[in-house]
Amino acid sequence: MLTNTPPPPAATPLPPTPPLPRRIKLRLQRAYLDWKGPRRERQWLYSWPFINSVEGWMTLGQERWLFEAAYSLASPANIVEIGSFKGRSTVALASGCRGRRKRVFSIDTFDGGGWDLDQRDFFAEFSENVKRCRVSQHVTVLRGKSTDVASGWSRPIHMLFIDGCHEYEAAKADFDCYFPHVVPGGIVAFHDVNEDWPGVLRLWNETVRDRLVDVGDCHSLAHGRKRKR
Ligand SMILES: C[S@@+](CC[C@H](N)C(=O)[O-])C[C@H]1O[C@@H](n2cnc3c(N)ncnc32)[C@H](O)[C@@H]1O
Image (tube, rainbow, N blue to C red):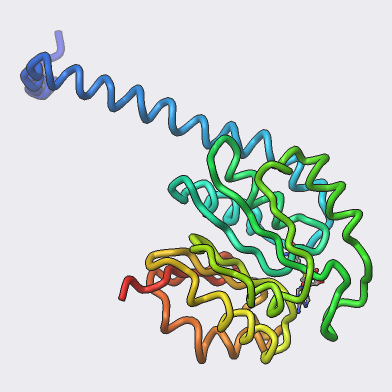
């Protein structure tokens, strides 16, 4: 017989059973979270092969960030993307819109522009990608120079993603034209905020960052929310 065995720890009493209405509330909350969590993940898992089939410059999980940002917006929502190229970021954003009244306005000349892109005439490829990735109903194409398109713009913007011409003056013109339309609390994101793109980095540091709250980054994709006042 063991004589030096320590006594077992005292049992922790069970918490009292909550009353029925509280139990029902807890059960409903759990069911809602079970339903909500997997839906988002299912939507991402379905979308990723499509997004990843499109040529583009997103890196290191930035597609996921765009998807999540679009998904997080309350419906209805307008997302403005300046600089779509062949549609990689467009498809990422539009994938977060599936099943909701959310729309990505893709603004691009689809013909390069600036000194930073030597490819030309990729509109057909962009259109084919959007169709093939089954997001056409969430994408409105506005083909033209971003500042020209801005002159006729009047809708509230719930998310603004700027990835057009990376020269300082051009990127600043994009920000100046579209930022006034962003609703308070709306998401503002810039791609290529790093030393490789000094114009975008300077604009972010001098003009954009201080006008936002909740500032963060996903590698070179810097983002925040427009101040409420
Ligand atoms: C870096 S690419 C965009 C990459 C894209 N977001 C992706 O996911 O792959 C920049 C795009 O901006 C467009 N662009 C450049 N200057 C522009 C301007 N002034 N107005 C509209 N689009 C412009 C180019 O045609 C090009 O497609």
